[in-house]
Amino acid sequence: MPPNEEKARRRVRLDAFAWAFVPYAVVSVIHVVLLAIDSPAAGPTKLLLMPLLMIPVLVSLRRITARAALALLSLAIVFSWLGDGAGIFFPAAPEVPLMLLFFGVAHLAYIALFARHLARRRMPRWALVYAGWWVAMLLGLGPHTGGLLLAVATYGVVLGATAAFSTRCHPLVATGGIFFLASDTLLALRLFLPDSLPSWSSPAIMLTYTIGQGLIIAGSLITLRKRGS
Image (tube, rainbow, N blue to C red; front, top):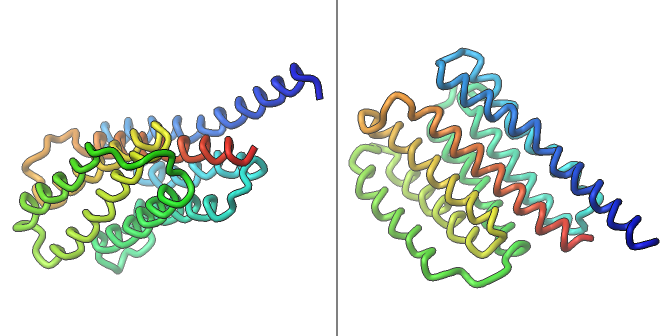
């Protein structure tokens, strides 16, 4: 195949990949705005986020040969979706423990994905800051978590590990890990120390969450697509 034709095809594939994120980005913005104006439509839009984030994964299927990596990526998205809708999907069950469980599984899938399939370098020394974050959060929130102390502490370990292992990956993944950590930190403060956050905390939580998830998925797929091409 002539070089110019091959470049054109690659450009088309790249354009399709980039456009696959547009529905997720648009609904993310809409969801954050709806939260900011306290609209009841915010709930349904939240449940659209993770399914829309599967679109880039589906678009990339033919370009990625590492099926185990795709399975882990999909698992993380599915369990994130379950975490997003825990209170809606399981109204009779306690919401916070279910959220911790579902997102905990999602983080374990991300950790396995980062460590086995996406790692490009050693973990930098500065990643130790995530261990310090865990200690600080446990000291600050521990007295206010009641019977959820062990669950919160365990979830904090996997959340911090996700952020730490993301530092070994594509810069987009590492940045996404920071945003995801920031989102869950704000959420924890809102749940256990509600008076410590202003009224705009809900939009901030979801803004950092959607950015974090989007960057993690984008960086992961970029790495896997390059290796699978």
